[in-house]
Amino acid sequence: MNASIRKVNLSKQDIESFVGVYKSAYKGMEEYAYKKEKSIRHYFKWLFKRDRDGFFVAELDGNAIGFVACDSNWHNLFNEKMGEIHELAIKQEYKGKGIGKKLMEAAEEYLKSKGHEKFGLWVGENNKKAIKFYEKLGYKKRDKFGIWIRMEKYETKSI
Ligand SMILES: CC(C)(COP(=O)(O)OP(=O)(O)OC[C@H]1O[C@@H](n2cnc3c(N)ncnc32)[C@H](O)[C@@H]1OP(=O)(O)O)[C@@H](O)C(=O)NCCC(=O)NCCS
Image (cartoon, rainbow, N blue to C red; front, top):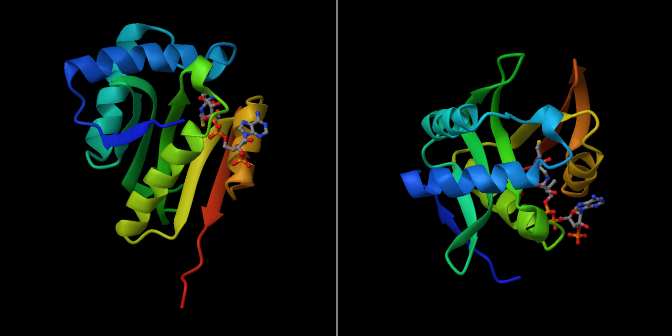
């Protein structure tokens, strides 16, 4: 699928289309998502504030079909510097077409450009599809906190 990836500037239009993508992506997985649109909008603003250069959208014919928000300024629970993936969402009808992988590649490339070799994320324990997806990309389960599973991936520097 020929989706293009661009950096997000989080215009009002971005926010509105991302709300649609987010709600569609989490259909059937609502336990791990914000429900109120006001909270979702607030969450997007928080993501953008965390790292203005780490938010990417996948578009098809100018329409948002997925996005990823990562963070090059994050520290994990052990105060280790980490490249954190905060959010990844693909619109229902575009899942399974390689868009999630493409967005993760963009996020990891960006985090690498900021000097990160360790990437991490939290995923809902019953979100089996996402867990399989992340495992396929090289992430491994490292920890558990309540309903959340910690997954991390360590890159080794090429010589
Ligand atoms: C999880 C999610 C991001 C995956 O995105 P996607 O665009 O559907 O995944 P892709 O098509 O890029 O898949 C990439 C690889 O993962 C594999 N994969 C994807 N879903 C899978 C599944 N359910 N089971 C096994 N493998 C799966 C694909 O087969 C593909 O492998 P390949 O490269 O060998 O072909 C997407 O389904 C989603 O938006 N889920 C709801 C929101 C969510 O859970 N976000 C994560 C929160 S932490």
